[in-house]
Length: 315
Image (cartoon, rainbow, N blue to C red; front, side, top):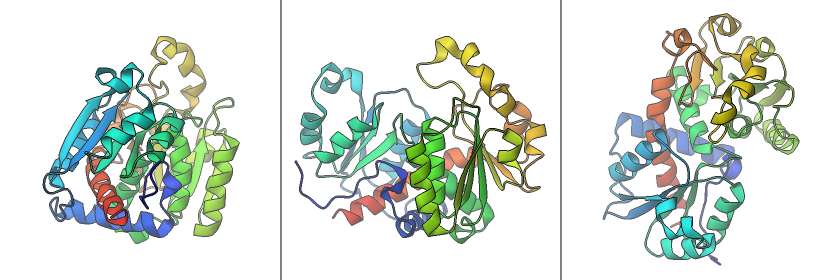
């Protein structure tokens, strides 16, 4: 097991408020100049492992690693020995001797934690069933981009509506609280966040001046919000029961009527892929309040900043 003082990013609160701010400031610098830093020049390889399908994660990490001067070693788990039963620990021991970082899009959070426990290089959560912290960094970067900088994030109200029990809701609460935001999560009974995640987010919010609230009414969640966010109602693997699963979420659809409850200058975000006419209407996602495409681009800048920061902290 590694004893190296290495920094990982496995969940949103692996960054302190000051550290998150530093990453976001660097993300804005990368937006201005995509080649401002090249910590992977050589090129150094970064392993990018996929247990789940991906578009934005695959593109943004692959392009970002290349722009940092590195080589994205993209591995589909099912075509590797990891997919045939090789242990996570053994995989970590192989990868960390040849790669400068490991990025993994997987299922259980425990798998990612095991990888980090045996890795002497930074391990990054590119999505698990529990958290999606890289997406929240991109969303915070989008708020900073559109609101006048990182200083403008704290005090903003972010409303997430839909499946409040999923990984996105968890990361919005923890990551948003770390940024000092007022996070409201709205979902139907039976699809609310885990109590321990809410408690952790509220603990962080008490330190940063933010707040975290869970409600079961969409209008209550969105009322006066500066940022309105949703996510697909159907997670990967649940497609067969899509129609039945979607029923409880219908009142939480982000349409013009719901967005009307938000602040006049509210922006709308969606991590994508979006199912138009389900969790969000075409009129909203294609409308003047939508910042979805900036948000998708900001995955690139935020992740480049994160990798740069982790590599420097772990040197």
